[in-house]
Amino acid sequence: MSNVVIPGLVPGIQTSADAMDPGHEARDDKPPLFEARDISISFGGIRAVDGVSFDVKGGEIFAIVGPNGAGKSTIFNLISRIYEPTGGRLLFQGTDITNVAPHTIAGRGIARTFQNIELFEHATVLDNLLIGRHCRSRPNIFSELLFTSGVRQEELRHRTAVEEIIDFLDLANYREQRISGLPYGVRKVVELARALCAEPKLLLLDEPASGLNTEETEEVAFWIEDIKSDLGITVIMIEHDMSLVSAVSDRVLALNNGRTLALGTPQEVQSNPAVIEAYLGSEAE
Ligand code: ADP
Ligand code: MG
Image (tube, rainbow, N blue to C red; front, top):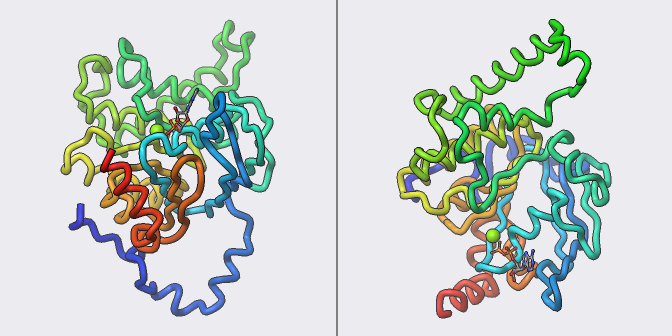
């Protein structure tokens, strides 16, 4: 992946936009798209996430790294509201979402993929993607029974949105195939597509490159860049592949044992002594 060079994202290199805008620090005044304030959760006696704070600005690609068991996926489960935090607040677009119902999260504009792909194995790619549109449906049982033109129009709108994502991620050849018959790498892309079908403002990717070969990982890097630049979606990505993290991330949060080790540019985080020690320690296990 070292051959993936994304202009403007190379740490330490000032972009021309920064150079022309000496007051660019002031942009930090605008409220972040997402904010985690001092969030914690315990399972039994284990503090899986222990007082973690970070914010993600609109348009950013923000990575979360750390050894296995560091608390990364738990943070996604807290943001998705699958888990109830024992402390702290979550804010999205300036609104406190700490206590909102989990089923409203996608409708608010937060979509995710799972570390272990979660798709309907016996359904086709197209059907899985249409299910991804669920949060964008306006359920109305009476008009559905009558099958009014409004319902037909909505159905058309969903199909059009799904076809756009199929084109965007190059999935046309797999449209009618069942998930169970697809190679692992394609399933990962279908899961990404399903999350995009929800039209998120914030996309949470849990290890998008795990289990992929070098070529597939490079493809994922380009897609993440396109999701940001073409679709204008902000991304939080959990990832072990540090070359992918360095290639696409604006900032990185490193965790260990549920706590923040470092937060900064990919270069800053990779050269942080506490991060190096945590990684060496996990390799020695
Ligand atoms: P990772 O950084 O590898 O994604 P996780 O967030 O999955 O780590 O897990 C962090 C810690 O929390 C681990 O010790 C894990 O066993 C524990 N944990 C996560 N979810 C649960 C749960 N539902 N019940 C009990 N322990 C959990
Ligand atoms: Mg995980």
